[in-house]
Length: 154
Image (tube, rainbow, N blue to C red; front, side, top):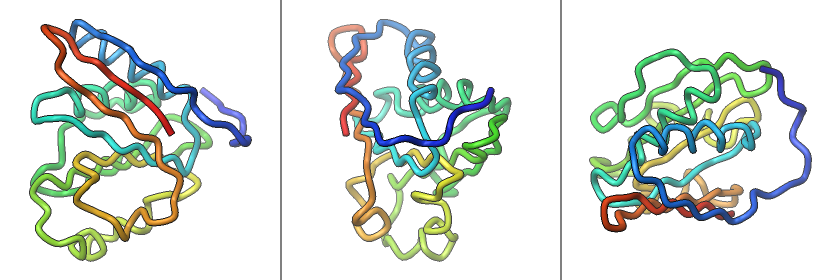
């Protein structure tokens, strides 16, 4: 899986209604094919909305074989991809974050926006400085009846 270097582009605004966990994973795989190194994805939604499920799909699309779990207590997980351009997927969960400085203590600033990484941040509203001035792709996940509505925009 080799991708071309990033070119000026923006993801078109997408909205999907997905009625299963498997469909959410498949959408994440599709989305991963549009990502470039340096991309930062803000994942917003209530507890249980599907943020980590979507992350599993993105990881699968990047060739990551590891079991993807939310880093709720560790704050950050780093996965090596099977990709020559995007070499790492960084998954940050700030749900239990009390102070943004903790992310600096664990070295998150080395990965957020790095040209060889894609960074997914759950509960991004809890941080400001780490992503200030960087290009953000916002993904909002909502429960709608028995399905998930996913909106992607930048």
